[in-house]
Image (cartoon, rainbow, N blue to C red; front, top):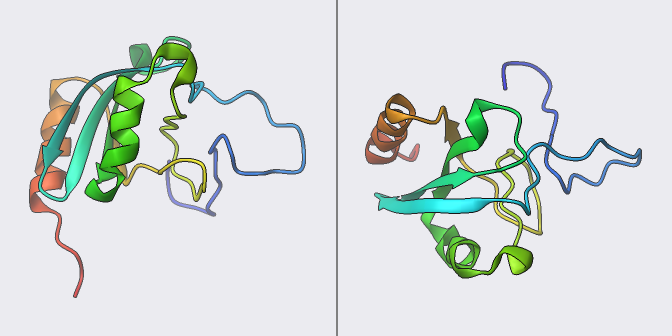
Length: 121
């Protein structure tokens, strides 16, 4: 995160060098819950091998990704599609439109974002 050149840390960015394994592993997660809010879906997920934020993530996706996210929720552990929390342009999986710190404050911020975001006209 931050201001500067766009650098993707997406697990399927297609770099020519051998990248370090993604952290968190986008195939090793558990969706705690999903909440549709306005034109978005808030996803609370746990990544057991993640090193930051006690393995918890609050991710916001566009509603158009609902069918994909539903597969993430109902699939068994070995058959889950990737749920990569990094921003990227992947053909394999959707990118979140926003991420927030896990916990009550982050969830409040995600709800505020989803309820108040307006497309530019």
